Image (cartoon, rainbow, N blue to C red; front, side, top):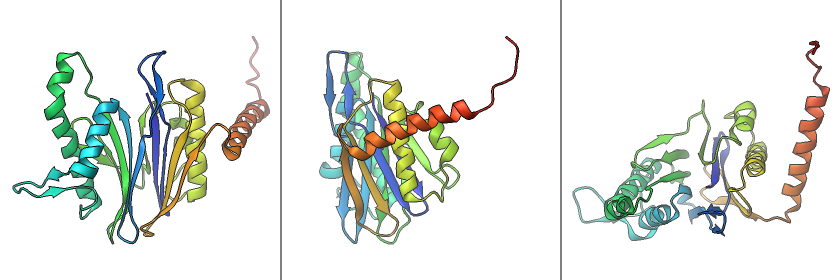
Length: 247
């Protein structure tokens, strides 16, 4: 299991992913689930994955390195060459379907699960900054101003704080803080999501990554944030008046 959250805000993107993989209580490992493509001045694309690790790695490698054939031609296209973010989402969907064509029957014969979810956000050239979620079938949805975030993996514990506090015009720094609180809430409630955490921040139209950072167990800011959030929640419920009911 994993948890990844991406915010598409007025001023830019925030992408955050844990690194824990769980194939049983005696088979827990750490794998990076956030990949980035950066050609300064030309494109920035962030990719986060959840689901079957072999499937997600195969799909990302195909989209980033091997390439996918452009329809009705022998030309190979990758995320390094796509002309728009919409085409990037389409190409990633094609890669997922191609991996299913190659590996799907074998997985199904072994009672395996072809399960993959991908979040992909960024900007290419003068095009619009966009954020997509690609499904196992290769289709996708896009984040909007009304719903400026997308989540994959074990998302239910981290969703309430984002639903209550996030808006499209939320400042990038505040968006990052909310994403980190969302991650902390998930890790507290589900042991299959864990440290370290990888993050990327991108400012709209910059065409370069503003920040990439790995948060480890000893990270001072994240440790303080976790403590402050717990204290704030405790104080909040204590200051709310009781119901006044007799029982």
